[in-house]
Image (tube, rainbow, N blue to C red; front, side, top):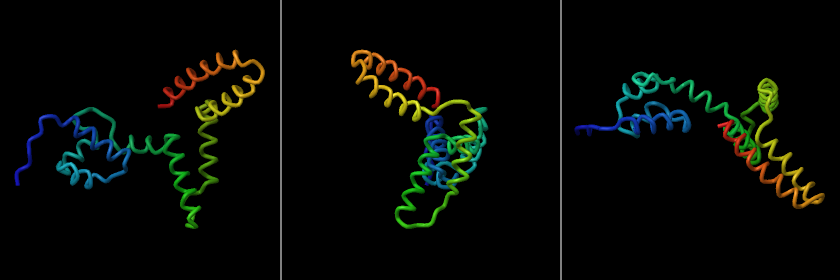
Length: 150
């Protein structure tokens, strides 16, 4: 069987990168799924031909993103709820997150949201009209902060 010639590999390369970085698929599985040679996947993984960062570094950075850490923790909680053994050292993970936040010197969007929500609830009992004004500014700030974290 003859392989089809592709005219636009950039979309295929982008899909392969997403499968590797975000879906944690192996290069072999991607090669099989997309009908791309293992050698091509290997070159793409290394950033060859695109002067791009290698996919292993991107995968590591992706795994450290707060959303993905929360996902790991949620999966751990689900395992524990089913009566399974723990697979994560939650104490060590918690300490690492605290250290990371201290170094960054920033508060997470989730914490800001919680404080704003509490403040807005309190403010609505003090001055409802003013609370509406603050709520709109809080929304704008949260959108800005979420964009910074992406």
